[in-house]
Image (cartoon, rainbow, N blue to C red; front, side, top):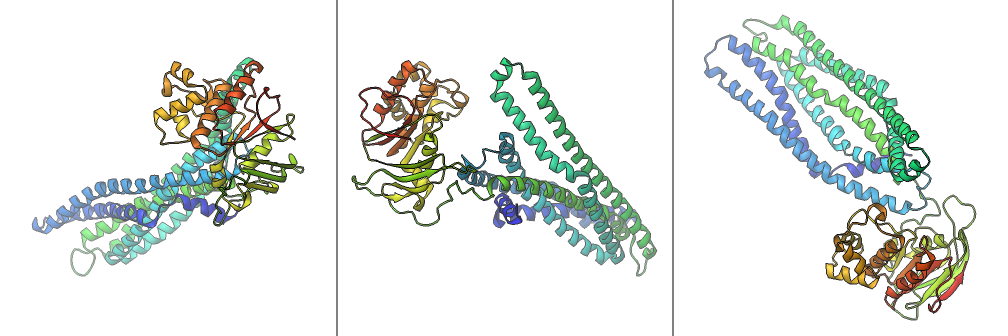
Length: 553
């Protein structure tokens, strides 16, 4: 994994300069108020001890109030502005990461544990928002405020400014070294522990019945508990590192104040050209405020290390080169599809397809044409490569040979253009854990309820839907509340709503009782508009009377 790939991932999480500037500006004002409040307050206390006329203190009194109010007001406004920018960018980050994952499914990430993929896409992507919030913002703000404070302190007492600068460098280096020494290993373990825990939880929930049937629940609970303990240990190490760093900076702050007190006290005089008592007190106390602001820098370095680790895992998932078997994104101007009815909707010649990492094709030498209004049946035994062919027809897998959609070679157009023409109904259609309405609107988000009910009637689900409560009926996680045949009908309804000119049905009767499989198949084919080109993939015999063309793998 090279640095350019990691940089591209981090760049997705960083808001534009225009969005980030407001938060940075408000952050500088807030931290300047912290330093100004402490310094001016100390000056006012000592000056008041001299009992000058009250008018001589009015400016300082107003200044203390202004700094106190400004610290809270600017901090609140800074949090609003910076978080608004970061959270707005988070939506962009998530969508761009998801888009980067699309070409890799299926084929490029199947070898990874589900827990690792889920952790990278959820936890690590969310962790990347720390880059603008906990890395760049505090680092830039702290550096600006520290430099301005050193300049002002140098005007009052140059020696005090020199001592403070040296102690800041020493304390910063020591805290960075200590943090890296203690928590660097825990950062690596943290990602592994998160992946282990996610994987164990996913297996527990997805395989609950199997685990219960074979007495594996206790073993799975133990695995989850062990992953939780490893995650807690890694997090505890990071917390200890943060505590040690904070203690080191507090110690350095106290030592700096003492050194400034000892170094500057000879210049303190009751009168004349020396340093006045109020300014002397301010010079001694200002380093404590500067260290309070500077404490954000080591914390930012720790957060940066965590962000880099997360970015590395996300980049490994989304930025690694695609296997040769996965289609590369098309770059260029996509040609228009032909409207000539004489041109086949799909035309395949000597097509070969293989899975990523495989040495031999899963299917080879395939040739056929299918036109609008025709139904092509592709048959073959299980494992003959029928589903692999379906994935190639929607450009989820690369192919060798020629494959044209309405006269356009598949490699010469975008995947989005192909998938606007060719729709795939998988062997096990994915249904979202939402109501029936939302599951249909994924295909046509502006469809009215009447249109949705009409298409349900077309696929033979209108009566069933009304019995379940209409379009508000829940389908359950992954369609747990519907049968396999009903899931196929819902998927077909989505294909009709999406208005695909070409529809591929991949084993639509798999897992359905033979008694109802023939009726389901007839209903599915009959529900499609007559001008659609249909590719039916199956390994079972078709009912008599279905007008189709056949092709055997």
